[in-house]
Amino acid sequence: MVNYASDRTGAESVVDAIIAGGGRAIAIQADVSKSADVAELFERAKETFGSLDILVNNAGVYQAMSVAELTEEEFHREININLLGPLLVIRESLPYFGPDGGSIINIGSGASRSHPPGFSIYSASKAGLDAVTGVLAKELAPQRIRVNSVNPGATLSEGTKEAGLYGVDNDIEKNLVAMTPLGRMGTPGDIAKVVSFLASDDSGWLTGEVIFASGGLR
Image (tube, rainbow, N blue to C red; front, side, top):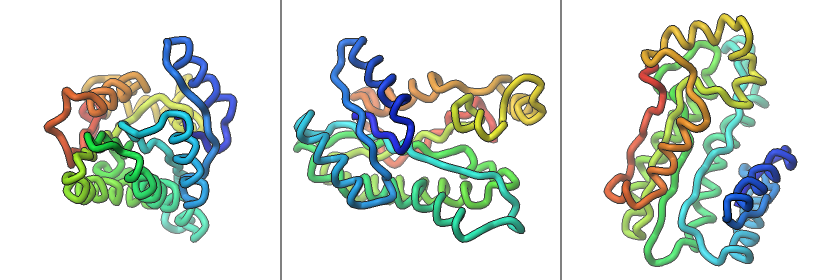
């Protein structure tokens, strides 16, 4: 089940890739910060797939701004999607996991530890998600549901491109690469491998972990 907020074309391309690889998939539009949308999301999932084994909370937004520029609107936008959203999704997901439990993987951010200037709201929202991961790992363990977080560092993604964090002769990208011990920006594939591990039985003894997939960036 591929959830999207506004990019239907992008979501459908992911669905097409999954189907081409021999899987089954559907794309569903939903705003994860709204309970009604989240409920509909899981109803559609149940109709199509029956039960739930793996949940990846990947929705996230950010906007660089100094504290002097901070607005209530931007605070609530980021907190609602980045922190309230995963909580609403996890709450709604619980009846859909079977007796064998499953794996919940939150996509956090290295910003929860590195605290980059201009990202006070975003860093706070992702630090909150780290805390949620730890709490729910303990809370949901009796249901055999594992909860972990993957926190990327500087990563080449649609979001970082739109934010102007990388590109030809981009000084921000050069600085990020210089600060990263492994000497490059991360890729979605780098993060996907860690998520796949946490989704698999190979990580069956891991819960409550926050894994910084950042190339060593602190």
